[in-house]
Length: 293
Ligand SMILES: Nc1ncnc2c1ncn2[C@@H]1O[C@H](COP(=O)(O)OP(=O)(O)OP(=O)(O)O)[C@@H](O)[C@H]1O
Image: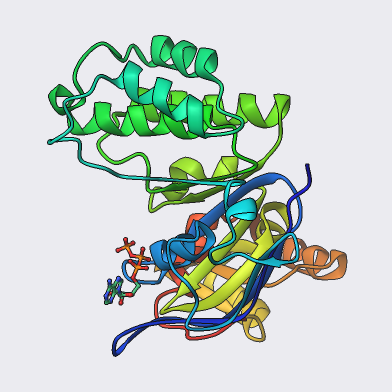
């Protein structure tokens, strides 16, 4: 089932604190969407709107052309996985998953059990006895097993060790191949997770700074390295995100689509062109910018 999420001039204000300002974008395709932003940028606020936990203060948020807020029919398509403490939860993981399978329309209990095996998570243990990382693993297992057409993970990896995170990424990719859905991942682990993304959404200070396809984003940036005065001359009219100089050698990261003629000119000057990463673009665009490029 194809899902259509549309936000049109959405604002969210908590008391006197504006969390989101004039957010408009849409998602029409299954895929993995990386939601990036510095602390307090508004990621959880945006995801809470998409999960129907909150109502926009103004603007329109629709799922499949219907207003999402308090819309039971549409909300069942969405599952929101967030970091949760289970310190007062005496139930066993197995029982929680069993319960979930009764209420969630697409929940795949066998899949949940197979994931628990892969993560070596003991589902017979009462939840309060799990460590922080194990609790996150449980949340990830539950989120994946919902098979919700829109599955949201809000910094779901908290406390998970590197092998467990790698397994999480592997499972996401496997699932996307088998049964593509919209997966929204908010994260600060950009360099570790960017290979997963089909599209990148960057929030900055409550505003939408950028929403682009992963490949398109990378194609719009490059690093240029070589003799400093030549690098300066060629990058003079470009949007330079970052510069570094060591002796007479300079390296700049530019946010600029390099056409064939420009690439030729740069190479003719004996300069090297390299790739940028989403981490490069994110770090440098969110140093202080307020709006889209
Ligand atoms: N319940 C609330 N009441 C008042 N202000 C809030 C509330 N929740 C969030 N905010 C504010 O809204 C803004 C966005 O917060 P949000 O939690 O959405 O950011 P975030 O991008 O998820 O941050 P982080 O990466 O640190 O988790 C922040 O200024 C935050 O202080």
